Amino acid sequence: MRRLRGFAVLAMLAALALSGCQTAPDQALSVGDVSLTNAEIDAAAGEFEAARVASAAPGTPPITNEDRAFLRQYLVQATIFNEVARRYAEEQSIPAPTPDFADAAVRLGLAEDHLFVRTVATNEAYQELLLGRVPAAQPTEEDLHDAYDRYVQAATAAGVEPVDFETIKQELQATPQYSAGIGLRNALAEAVERYGVTVSPRYQPLEVPVWSAPNSRLVLVALEIGDQADAVRDLG
Image 1 (cartoon, rainbow, N blue to C red):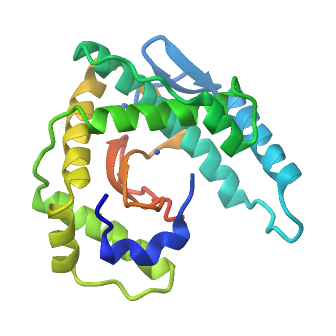
Image 2 (cartoon, rainbow, N blue to C red):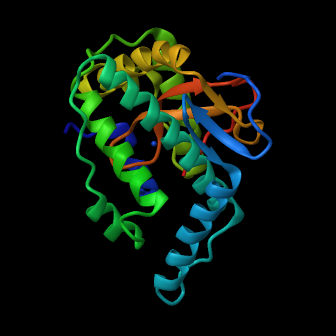
């Protein structure tokens, strides 16, 4: 995979991925007949935190409230992506992937049947599958400026002087994975309208990650759900 020079400074950020319709009071999200409650999200994130604390080396910084919010947001984002991707793959007669639950369980320190493990492994499997099967698309100027703005915010937060727009633009245009991410985002954006996606106001506005910069958690292509006017992007 071609490494983006402008994003090399963000390697320190490396880490392990609508509708305004009303949901039930305790429902976090639903995609068709699949749903998760806020209680299920909170329990899964809490168990992940407990496992991390139990296995942490002495001197490891404690998990912050920002970390906790990220864990819950991730479960919502990834579950929506997984369910939309699964339905889209079925529509397109693309064989389902085989998630590596065992590997995810080892990395996360949880049982293979844990919600967090299954969500992470399924998310990784569908992203890899569809990024390689859905036709790529040429990014628009708006796409490129959006990606650059995300990069600048992340670089600034990391205390690094960002490179200029033209440099990042050229690198993105020369990166097949970026164009593949744009193509997948466009396809899933159309599919979302067909699948009855709803998400609790607790998690809106919501971005579902589609493609991130290599070796980082910096999302450069995302499927936006809900009003993005006040969106706060996770920059790691």
